[in-house]
Length: 186
Image (cartoon, rainbow, N blue to C red; front, top):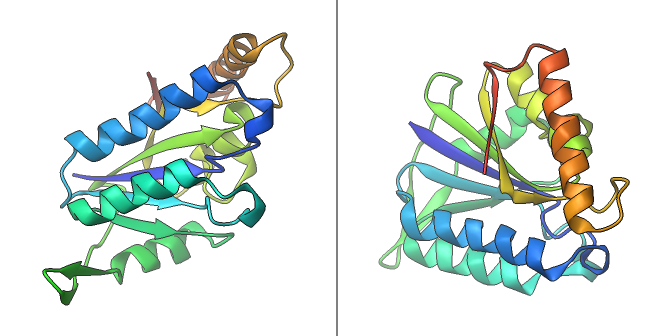
């Protein structure tokens, strides 16, 4: 079973987020890099989209992942089909030799794990790689709350904003009967 880890707008707007939430999110990404299998885990991120918000920490984690043998693919505004095509044609460098490792991701052989910013918006339904778009393509999705943070939600502080976003996520899943298609975990 493949794991496709989608880090959507992961950097977000750092000045609007607290350091504790960010530390938790980055720690979870590093945990995936340290504990998951390089053969079946693929990272997707769009953190290079916002050049002025260059995320050195995520870039370092990407370099660790690549040096460990993971595939890390950047996306922009492509459709899910275009992203899957990128994944299927990805080359890896192995001991100085470029190898093409063909990967065919399908709803039957892939688990999509989503993290980033704006849980109840971009991550759930507002972006090209949102949970609902993956579900529409037939994939089961895991929303990893420890990789999510919210700065746009109403709330007094980061914890309050995250709780409101997580409650909104739950209500959406329940309302649209997605309970068997979108899993939520920490």
